[in-house]
Image (tube, rainbow, N blue to C red):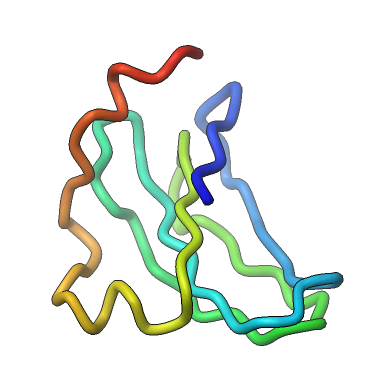
Length: 83
């Protein structure tokens, strides 16, 4: 799931009502991954961007790692999304 935030800020995610483990990547305006956090199901632990983020991309836990995607990698096509 892709979250598009209205502004660049330190956004945080949690897993209160989520039943499966997920990974979240926080991305800046250019689509560069700032940090990736693994999140445990049904917790209220905050997982936050390390610097101002415009997007958060959630996947199954380990998806980024299994593909060699890490901070500094870039997601293309985000400039085509409506804001």
